[in-house]
Image 1: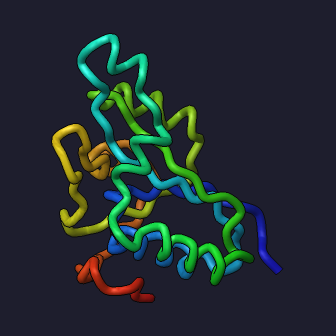
Image 2 (image 1 turned 180 degrees about the vertical axis):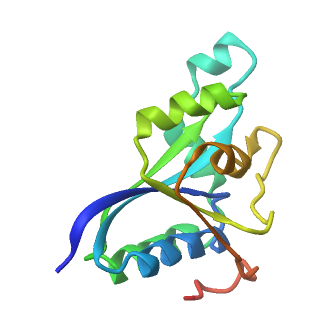
Length: 157
């Protein structure tokens, strides 16, 4: 029987490789329901019109690499008993203080980050939030990721 839930932050660049961190979280907390929050850094547009029409859903949709959604569905199906919630958050701040406020709103218990710097944004407006997580989250697990060929199907750990 699964215990209480734990809220875990996991940085993502919306590639299949980054989903290895989700599976690591599930395997690392086998008797716990997980609230998984994938987090990505995104710079807001510089003009009023861009900010007015900014859509989190649209931004996320355009960033997901080929195979990402299929791999995510596979994880959710395979580990449905371990996952309580699965969500995405965009960090749009620019400094550690903004990230601290962001963290307080999320009320995360822990974070799992890659030990290698392999996460990257696909364009200039996206940035890796791993350094912010590393500096501000108390319960942190660093995991080496295996670079996957993104054209290949999801590979379990």
